[in-house]
Amino acid sequence: MEPRGRPDFEKLCNLYFELSNEERLEILHLLAERPRNLTGLSNELDIRNQQCSRHLSRLTENALITKDVEGNQILTEVGVVILRFQPTMQFLTDHQDYANSHRLSGLPSRSLYSLGSLGKGSVTGNLNLSLFTIERIINEAEERLWEVTGEFHLNTIRPRNEALKRKVRLCSIEPYDMVMPGEIREWFRSNTEYVDVAHDSRYEGLIQERVVPRVDYMLHMSEKEALVTFPLPDGSYDYAGFTSKEEEFLSWCQSLFQETWAGGIDKGAKIKELYSWVARDGELSEALMKFPGADSSPLEPLDIVRDNELTVMGEIVRQFLEQSIPPSAIDDSQYWKSMMR
Image (cartoon, rainbow, N blue to C red; front, side, top):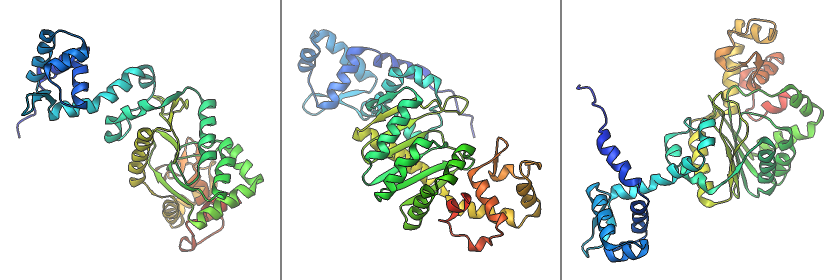
């Protein structure tokens, strides 16, 4: 097989040059609406016919426009596709500081190429504003909630439980190595009614949960509004992100969620799988029961330990181990309540 040659940068640079002119770019946008002739374009752009003709010649030479059977200027297929990419370029230009300080490159290619849909949203610049927005999204949900998150926040627990009481359905995605802070675990243990609501909702099928190896964004969404935030270069979150109620914005978020969901595994099934591994391996069982005093290295590959803390799934597996529950007896919907004993 012959080695691939370098891209034809000359042709690409010529294309970029033609697109860098405001009048030529405006011509493309006008033709995206409907075919137009030279005179009509000149009048709409308020430029001379001769100047407009030069622009049309350059766009034609670069295969961005052509003429239809009636002699009107129309976009080529290449022209149509290039204009569809422009909102993403516009978004990156308008939010260059954000894009350079956050990691967007981890998104699936389909979502990355259509990133311009987020241009319909407004910016939430800090944690407080984002948490306020998340609470509003949950409070106003009537039918569905979708969440992708790697962190727990106390102020979202109450509105989420109230939503479940209203029979709002929740689809949730979290990473394998998600850790619950100790203060939140203790809060749950002293507020067992919240655990009961979540447990009953799982039993009723109102909650569906999947886990994935990692998440490269956080999403909170109802049928009315969405908030999406992206990580900093080190993987942490400052919760600056974008929110909107616009249909295009919601559609982009829904597509991103569905692609992530398709790559996940049912959380209860994953916990059962982990428990089965640990329960039949004496070394793993001993390491988990002695954690954090014992060497955690045999537990690391199983997503049971992160940063010298037990993950949520690791804590549940240890609870099952302490109770000597046979793996075959585990009900996938009961794990949360067991963890809070």
